[in-house]
Length: 581
Image 1 (cartoon, rainbow, N blue to C red):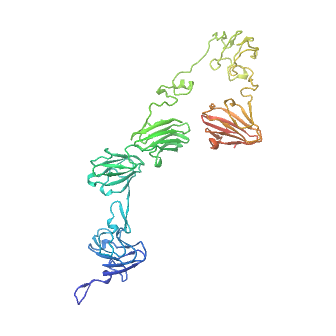
Image 2 (tube, rainbow, N blue to C red):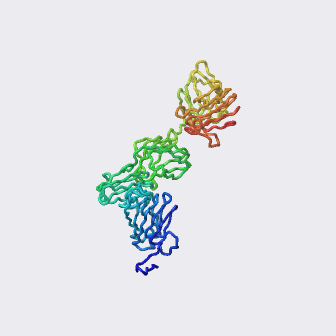
């Protein structure tokens, strides 16, 4: 309660409220002179400040506890600048050395309050940075500094207003729509920066005017721009565009597995995609429903399909294995950009057979199997005759061409029970004068020209090189150095005899196309190490996941070890055997 001076009749306020000498080495928080203890730091009318260290602050108490009009004078008599802050932490003044400032409260409805300030005369006049700070500027001590306040939002539709001048607005939702303020209201020099960090297109539409001459601007995921106005129209700087991106880039993604695989994060808004990995079921690559182009290379493996679509798209676009397609999204669905490209095999619906071989083509086209049965007595090329029991009767000097898979022949020959046997009359002549004895053994005269298919005719299976043909023997190909396999090595044994290390190389399918099912045996009988490897094709150790191409495919055969390599797919081999690592 105030005291009355009996001699003069004027009101005398407590000393704590009238004057405070504040020497400080740490930040100090003041208290209102309501119930202040003696010796405390009261928010007095006049405060002389001495800061013993740089960067210190004076924090005022809660502005809601006093009435508007409360006034204080701060005089910095020390050597260091001091910040005076409201209770909410905002800087009111930066009190430079040898300056005096008066502050008074104009609004006490918030914690920090609203304060007006003005500087008293000083030997050196200085501007107060906090009083000058506006949009795009902030006060740090006694200086003004550039500022871009970042604000994240997923609200749509939403309006960008004048107060967002110099802001960085970040879109975090799916498909969104923002509107810009009227250009002549915010005036020439107003600007805002916007980035689309969401998963869908963000459409930005000016009120009344145009932006880059268009009615709106569409930012795809990952795009950003700064928008400025001259007071009449809007313009974009940097990355903003109504098209999709401005540069070509490439990314490889392992999409092993099955089901939906949704592109996200750094993989959004790219151009060229290479998908790899083993598919365990059909795989859908889900892209945003925003305008974008996609160059897709399907290098996945596994007997399943790869599709590209938006989340809601009903009919996805298939990209065949080892094929490359150019696609684009129109903002709703993914579409094949090149309708003239032919993929092989050509589907029946596109006028093809849907297959790479005649047998499968007949099935794909719905044709019934063709049966080639000859009736009794039918004449053959050169005069041969087929009896009622489908036994050939061959006249002297006749020339006969027989395909046992097409003709149902006698199969009584025990040595060739899996194939049709030709029964002939003893002494019958063959092309060039050869004859067949009663036991079906060929008797060939000098200079005769005879073509024999041992699968069709039951004869002794001896090849021209002296090796038994078929399942009886494995012909040997002896090598004492590095060796590249050739087609003639199918079914053979590569016999490695070197005393020094040697490498057996499997050629790429692109240079030597071994048929799927090719089997080659490799045996190490020499003292030198034997290695087996591919270049670009894959070589996998049987029963493991150890495999790869090039150097990662290298396999070692131990001393007296034996390896069998089998081609199981177009570019894939499996190696197995005792002593193989």
